[in-house]
Image 1 (cartoon, rainbow, N blue to C red):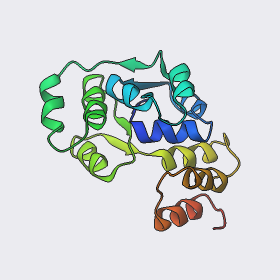
Image 2: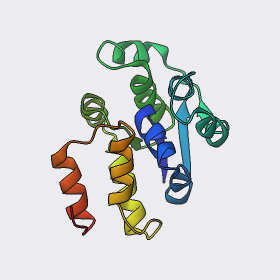
Image 3: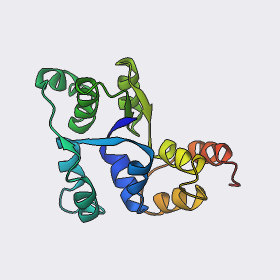
Image 4: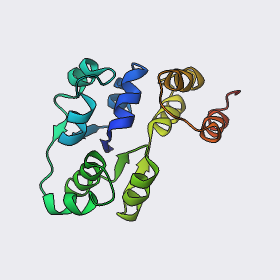
Length: 160
């Protein structure tokens, strides 16, 4: 399966030193140009790690009109994720932000996020536990609601 990833999941997986999970779980992962630029902007967390891992995964979108229309309600990276998925006929997008997830679903795309990737990694025994990764993300400033945190641990059959 192929996927297109947005900035927050990209940075989140870099924070927990697990960008390689994407290579293990997917046949191909694409990073829209706007997402790569945002994730590797000076001052961002794990910039060098993301640059090294992602430099051969960057793609530019073609349909700038569709991007512009989506940018009326989404940020540039989210818009490019959706447009790129449509252009390359990739049905899975990796996005954490609620509004972007809803818009992706309205565009008939399947959606997962950072926690979905980690749950799949546990399911396929790529990681042993989910909780340490969630705790590290929270400690590093990534917002995970208490409700989502508990639900993720329940799905992973872990104590919270």
